[in-house]
Length: 432
Ligand code: CMC
Image (cartoon, rainbow, N blue to C red; front, side, top):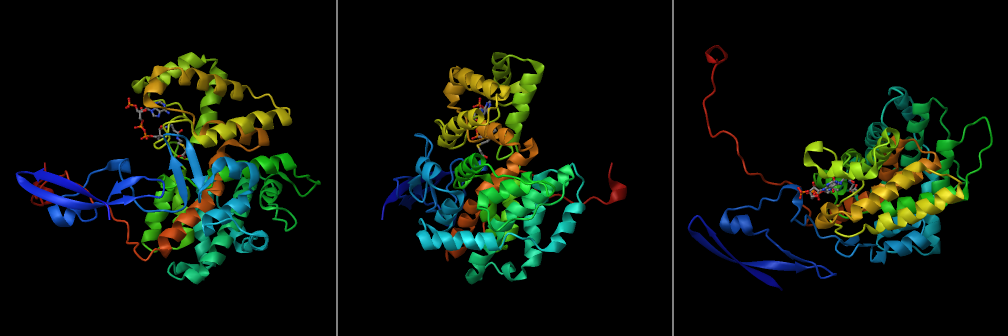
């Protein structure tokens, strides 16, 4: 076994340690510090985990220096070109591409579980029409555990397949119902003759009073967007799903917490924030150069939304594919969106600017995705819910990997306490 020699001098006390070195299948190296505290009494401090691998995982590989992303070894570019969201979901969850029969079976199961319990419909009525879809979606996903109590036992791995299928299938219906509720239209039920993505489009955009034709171009780009969002190893929401799941919370509850973690503008909420940023620039007439100057000023509190990434120090490969798709879709649909033009000019200005160059900040997945969703007719506050729908198979695969590993322990970081040392309780009458 490879090992690393670590020599520590802590307040005059010397420690010589032989720590195991774990080498990943792509050559990444990690010093295994699990024995550090036991042998030395000290822990590592790494807020935001910039230097910490929280797990071994065989699902997704990212090489942030070279802009590489692979699911189960397969490059994202190949999946984007040849696969469907259903097939990619199968790949992520089961570890390999399905054969024809397995894919058919998976698709059929997703089709057969799309209805939600009729009683759940009344939940939607409790929300104001202004409710953010992420608030509704996270609550609805968690509520599934009330309707499928067999899923409460996270340790029962025999129930995993049916629970994951229910979740992947019903999330579309719940998301579409949340949207219909927000615009005051009747719910549109799922249809068994439509594919996974066509069903989403139909439930969102059709109305019972007239025929609706699902545009294959929309279905194609939706497949692409969902594939590109399907997993991204140990990001904020996935780590949340794993952390909650490590306490043996059921799959529905774990994923609901992932949806909440995704919501913030530094994470999945960035796709909504990008559009708001572009709209503001468009409406105010502020020049792109001036805006770029503003986000460089730390006192402005503004960031260039859709730019930067903890892992990618190069162009995010997903952003490259989405940018190309945005051009294609907008031209096919005959849409001339001024926001696309502003986005491209911002990208050009930022990539030439030393602030962004020095910090290696490039467009990420969220920079252009909102422009496509806008062109397809999605309201801005639905963008992050679409991200959640795309990320679902990744969360499920990561939860499964964590749950099936006999070595999984509850996630429980330590801290360095910086508060008061011991002091006496002062009775209320004696306080100043
Ligand atoms: N605009 C301006 N400055 C930035 C930006 C940005 N978008 N991103 C990072 N920086 C600066 C940051 O101020 C810091 O500068 P300095 O070294 O002078 O203090 C430096 O770059 C490093 O930034 P950081 O905040 O330490 O980096 P991080 O790895 O903690 O954060 C990030 C990563 C994605 C949260 C951040 O780049 C960001 O806030 N981007 C905008 C929000 C966004 O687009 N989020 C979507 C991420 S991709 C999809 C997803 O994960 O959901």
